[in-house]
Image (cartoon, rainbow over all chains, first blue to last red; front, side, top):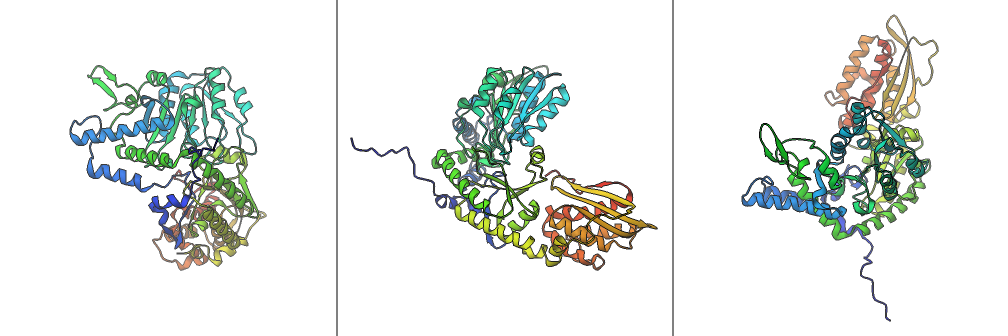
Length: 415
Length: 149
C-alpha cells in the first residue's frame, strides 16, 4: 500500500508569516526594533482584532439583548457569536460560559457567589504555593468573612507542584480547591486532570485559573474535569476587559447573582425580581460588547493557525531560549518544571531586576520585572523580584539571540 | 534618551563603589527603607549631633538607582540639619518628576534628572531621602511605594 500523506500533521509554524499581522511588532523603542517578551503580562493584538473592535463602533454600535432595531440585532448576534466561539474554544456548552472583565473578576464571582454562602468556621480552601494574587486574595477575603482557612500545597525546587502533598491535603474540611493551570512566574504546567480527578473523588469543587494556559495550550474543560475554569481575553490576543468564567451548569444554577441590574433579570417589581438563566444571570449591565467581539476575532485568528501548532512552536522556542539564556554567566533561572510553558524568570548575579528591565528597554527589549503578583512565590525562592521573559508564537529565535546579546551589554555596563 | 543618560558614569561609579557603605559605630539614629514591590532594601545609620548629620552610612540590597542615590546623599547630607534636608528632599522630588531641570544645591544628585522620563523608577531614588528622614525623625522605617503595581 502506498503511503498516504497525513494531512493532520500541519507544517511547523513560521513566526515570520504571522508577525506582520501584529501592527505593534513593527515599532521601534529607543531607536531599536521592539522585542516584545512580555506576553504573559498582556499579549499583542493582531489587526483582525483591532479591526473587529473598530468595525463594531463604526458600523453597528448598539446595545445588546435590548434593541430590536437592525444595529441592535447585529451587535447581539456578534456578541453572542463570541460566546459560541469561546464555548467551542474550551469545549463547553454556551450557557456555561459567563462573560466577565477578566480572570480576577471571574475568580471573585466564584468567591462571593459560590464560596461565601457555603463556607464556615472549620472549613478550608486548598490552593498551591505558585498562585497569582488573583487566586489568593479573593479566598482570603472569603475566609475573613466566614472563618474558613486557607491551606497551601507546596512546590519543589524546580517549581513543580508536589502532587502527593496536594492530594494528602484534600481532607474532609476542604470545601474548595484552587489551582493555577500554568504559573505566570515559573511557566509550570500543572497536571490539572489528575488534580481534578482527586478532587472529584472527594467531592471537592476545583477552580482552575487558566489565565496563562488558554493562550498557549489547547484547553478542554470536559477533559480536565474541573468545576470552574477562569481565563482572560487580553492574554489571548484579545482586548483588555474581557474574561470568562466557565462553571458547571448545576453550580451556575445554584449560585446567586453577584451583581444586580439590567440584563440579568426576567421580571422586576419592587417586591420581587426573577433572574435570567445562566449565563446572563451573572452579567448585569451593559457588557464589554466591543471587547468580546474582538476576542471572538482573536479566537478565529488563532484557531486558523492551530493551537497544537502554536504549542509545538512555543515548546521548541522555549527549549532554545532556555539553552541560550543559561549560557549567560551568573544567570539563575527560576522554574524548571518538566512540563513548562514559554515563561523564563531569572536573575543575574549582582544585577537588580529593575535595572535589568530598564536597561533592556533601552535595547528595545520589553520584559517584566518585579514580583509578578506572586509575593509568596518570591519568598519561596528567597528573592525580592525577578526579571521575566514570556514568549508567544510571534517571537523568534533571532529575537532570543538579540535578547541574550542585550543582556551581555547590560552586564558589561553594570558589573 | 539613551541608557547612558540615566546610568551615567557618576551613577554607575556610586553603584559599583558606594560611598559610606557599611556600619557606623556609635550611630544615634537609624531606619530601614523597604519597597516590597521592587525589592529595594536600605538600612541607614546616622550620627547626628546638635541636630546636624555628622556622619551617615548605609547598606542594603537595592537597584543601581536606589544605591547610587543613597551613596550620593550620604555625602550631601553631611553637616545639614533636618530642615535643610527636607528642603533638599523637596527639590529632589521636583527634579526627578521633571518640574526642575536642575538644582545646583543637589550637587551630584542632579544625575537623577533623567528619572523624569522613567516615572516607575522614581520611587527607587526617593527611598534614600525617605529613609534618612525617617531615621532623623525616629520613625524607624520608610517606604516610597504607595501605588500597588
